[in-house]
Image (cartoon, rainbow, N blue to C red):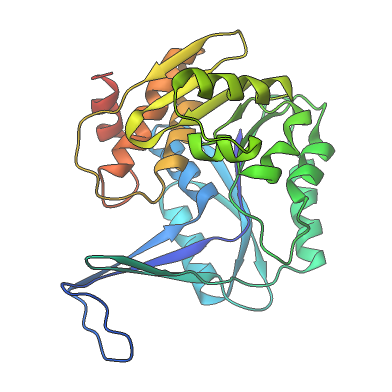
Length: 301
């Protein structure tokens, strides 16, 4: 079974305007949408769309949390969230006009009891399971919670996938994650350099392997993606043609597509192309990508 963890899920409230936001005045929208997610939930959704059963773990609170959990269940995903006694799961307001303004909520405080409950749930994972950790850590949790989780599970035959940045990622490399996915800018920031060429990106991706990562997938926005595999390959994917509508969830979709592609084929090039197709399909969609669009793009790679 694949498990994802979303520590701080959210409802993204998208407000579109036909003129710039006018602070201090009443502004009128031309359309609105609500999307229910968070990085782990996004990964779970794409996995399910591609026919991969999985369980979404995390925390939720209040009426917004209930709506998020119900949305997860409606997608056919197993939802195993811990409902908090106080607060509400966050609402992120994204105002789109000629510029984009975001107001991201803080989210509920997570009690020690709820945190311990999550750890006990994770302790039940077994050999052959896959655990995907993605995103930032709420301030009410220990800043080293990724390390704590992976240390508890290390040596049990569980496959780890980590999509995080800077120290959050660097500190878990000693647990030999199967896959990590920095973008090229994040990769450079980890080592205090600016990466401009494929050779430079490969050089520093291999440094992450030397520190413990098995496979390093580097996303490069309009320049595609590069995969440095544990068997020494450097694989490259370009960017499919399409109109970019949405950046939210594209990286999560790439992670999910890669995992799904590898599970189905056992081949790293197939996994890279499926990850690229999934990330691009979400970027070309108003919401997370459908399986049909992902597969259509995959066939062009």
